[in-house]
Each structure stands twice: as C-alpha cells, then as structure tokens.
Image (cartoon, rainbow, N blue to C red; front, side, top):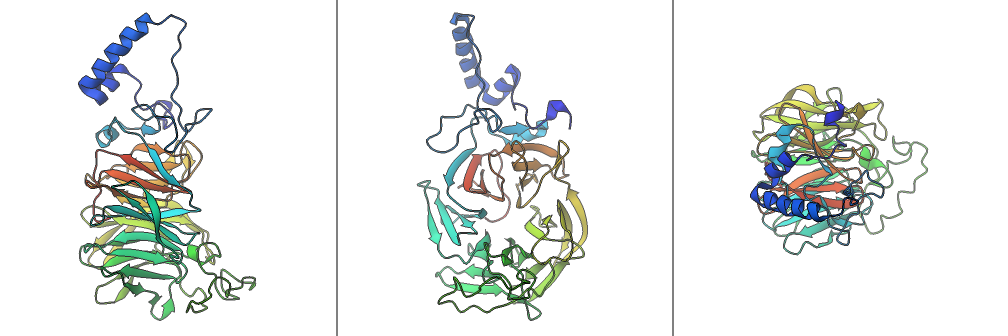
Length: 408
C-alpha cells in the first residue's frame, strides 16, 4: 500500500472533503472558523486531535474529552469506504473490565447486545435504552460465541462443557451439540444461524486450556503431563472428564438433530469466526493460529470462502490475506452488511489493531483503529446500523451508514 493510502493518515484532510462530509452545516461552521482565524494573532497554532498513535494518545470512555468529527481513528483507504461512513460520529468505548471480551450478538426482540467474557465465565448485556452493561449469565461456563436464530433464540458455545446450547423463550436451555459420531467436540467457538433452521459452528481446540475452559484429562493433548487438577472449580457440577478426540472441524446442525461435518481439518485448519454472505451462498471463515493439541502448525491467519449448497460447503479458497502495509494481521470474527461489505476483527500492532472493512471482492476499503486487539464484532441497534466491537478488555461501538445482514 502506498504512503498516501496508509491507514495512519488522517481520514479527511481537505476543505472539499469536509464539505462533502458535513454539507451546508459544515460550510457555515467553516465560515465562522475562517472569520475567527482571521481575527486570531498570527502566532496561533493548529492543534492535532489525539488518536491511537498520538503522544499522548487519545483517551477513551465516558469521562474522556470529546473527539472531533470526523474521527481520526476511522481511516479511509479507498474512496468507496465513504459511503459506509457517517461523518458526525466517533468510535466510543462504552464499557471496560473484561479479561477477554468475545461473542457479541444483537437481540432484536429485547433491544440489547449480549457478549462474553470467556475467561471470567460471564455473559454481559448492553441495554440499548439505558446504555448500561450488566451481568447477564454467571457462570456462563466459559461461553465464547453467541448468536440469535431466526426465531429470536440465543445460541451460545460453552468451552467448559465443549458444546453448543440454545436458550428457549421460556428461559430453559437445550443442548444442541456436544458430540460428533459419539466423540466429544473440542470446544465450539463461533456459530451462525441459517434461514433453513440449521446452525453452523466452528470447533477448534482453543477452549481446552485452563483459563478459557476445561483441560483434557491427564495424557490428553492439552494436559499431556497431568499437571492440572480437574476437580478444582467443578464443585456441584455434573461434568465428565474427557480428552480431545476430534481434529478441527466446521459442523452443521440440522433441526432434525443430525450433525454433519461440512469442512474438515484438511480443508481448513483452526477455524474460528464465521458468517454467511447476505445471500447465504458463501460461508466466510477465519483460520487462526495453532491450538492446544494440534498436530500441525495452525491456520494461516487468513479468511477463507466456501460455496454453500444446501448442507454442503465446497470450493474452499483463501479470500482475504489480512496483509496491510506489509504487516500480517490476525482475524478472529467476521460479519457482512446488506451492501455485501465484509467487516472483520484484526489483531496487530497499535495503529493496525481494530476492524478492517473489505468490499465483496476482498478489496480493502478502510479500518477502524482501536487501542486494543479486536476479537469479534456484530451489528446492532434498532436499525442495525451500529457496529459493536469486543476488543480484549472492552466493548466499543460506532454508528455507520450501513446495516448488518442476517439476524444478530
């Protein structure tokens, strides 16, 4: 990427761009500003708005100083990105305090966002009306991914029990999947609902470690030397001691209860976040690093695309290489909007960590810079035009000129 299009550059730097962004209101403001500038002594200097790269860096949270519009951490790399942006908005941190925030999903019926703190075994809820975050479920049994199906029921993956569950409208819980062909799943990570009633989910081994789930029994891939006491923290729980039995995989759960392996480890290693394109003809999957017990070097940290035909996925190919300015960034979660743009979380150095946006042909359009590595993301709000981002310890949100595709 050439220097002029570096994601570190200010996103609107000319008077013409500012007028395009703000329209007549911006013109009036600029005229007032011009008059003020003419009356200002020549010694006056122009300030630099703080962002993630300035020294001192931008502050975040409710008590932080306001950020000017447009937000300097919303980076335009390609002009096509402008149509997705609202000039009079900013990236906001609305909550912090997690160990590892993950799995945001929007509930349209309840008008709230649910997300996980995997390591703290807690689900939180962000209420739209009050903008407050509170504990939703504790313990969550190290829930990671969350989603809502087309009937408005919450779906969750539970690393501790290595399973997928569904929360019914009456508050009861149904176990959707915990085994395949009689063997225990590894640790279902992320999941997405299909209009045909099926649920597709990834099953890497990341949740078989001590901090994010439950290790194997002694001799298992995540506990080869038997150093972990599996009885600690399980008091009162009916939990079986198990060990990893399956390779990485992506599964499809059918409403009949049937579970099919749709993408195997030879096709894609260490599957993580996933989503369908807006027409449900393509499945996008993040392939990430080596997990506990893997007998290979792990995934290439890229995003793959698979053609979907009924209960089959085929023609897997690398779709997004996650290279920006010569740097290799790490994907985790992925979503699409109704215009076909692809939004994915990115882990990397400060100035590159956050969210990347691509068009439907994998052209990089822009980025949202965050002061933390982003794990996952989801569209929400009454109009589905707010992007929520779970990033390490915090929850961030930004208003956009796009709407998310599919249910929450």
